[in-house]
Amino acid sequence: MSKYLLYPGCSMETSARAYYDSLKAISGPVGLELEEIEDWNCCGATEYLGISLTPAYALISRNLALAAQQNHGKRAVVAPCSACYLNLAKADYYMREQPTLATHVNQALAAGGLSYTPGSLAIRHLLDVLIYDIGLDTIKSKVVRPLTGLRVAPYLGCMVPRPDYEKRWSDHEHPVELDLLLKALGAEVIDFPLKTHCCGGHMTQIGPETAFELIRGLIVSAEAHEADIMTTVCPMCQMNLDAYQGEANRYFGSAFKMPIVFFTQLMGVAFGLDPKDLGFGLELTSARKAMSRVGVETPEPQASAPRPRKDSSLPMPKPLPTKADLAEKVEAAK
View 1: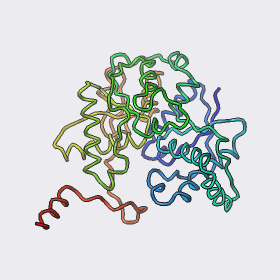
View 2 (view 1 turned 135 degrees about the vertical axis):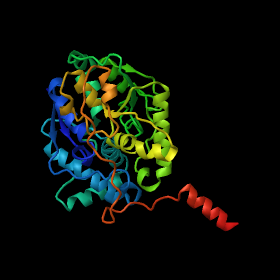
View 3 (view 1 turned 45 degrees about the horizontal axis):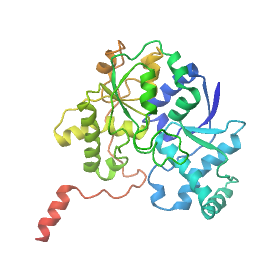
View 4 (view 1 turned 60 degrees about the vertical axis):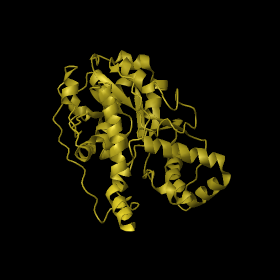
């Protein structure tokens, strides 16, 4: 049994519950033991580092300090979420490279009776652990229902492979780890050229037109390569491509219905596990047709479309001007 500390991040019990459910379902079969970091907090996602570095890194590093306290022979912290993984790895790296920053962060942590020695923990993404610690041979040995005939677009997003601080991936522009895992499950993996392109991140909130362009480009490419389904390693990527696919369709007048699922869900299907236990049905764009290609019946989607932001929500940057806004300003300036 391989043991790790788990940093789940905020999305795993909410918008990415299918990821969490399927991760828990496959952990036993592949011999993965995860111990959650106690009293962990949000990593700050992508916004806080753009506001003020010391409090942002203190927010992230509190999780590393807690993990170090809890580290009883478990050398690595595993983050399934790509944004969480990047933030944890970035904090550890910059505290090592910039002693002044490390001093300021530890002064902030000291207010809560904590400290962190950079480099004392290894920060790993879940996919990295599955490929390089658990191993493809072990994963392949658990396959009882091969995904034969299912054409899958492997989508990593931009935050896992770049920047690759510890040189963990085969290539930061075109890594093959997810491809190899899917092939071990028996799937037909398409050579997806946009596998590390950005999904737009939180641009859905402040610049929807830009986000829709990025989402549309990814799905158009997957469709052009005749993918039945896209799979991802990132909660943000899954939410943007699935939950905002309908809005992108309305914006462009398109009719894409590309299902977007987590790679752990496909692992669970190949292991013969019940689709309900893997979070199928939580997606907005149904995966039923795609999964029927491997003889698996999945639940109808039950989730609802994204809700508009409330006035009481945490502050976000002001929305960017739309094309219509800009055209109006140009016209007014004439």
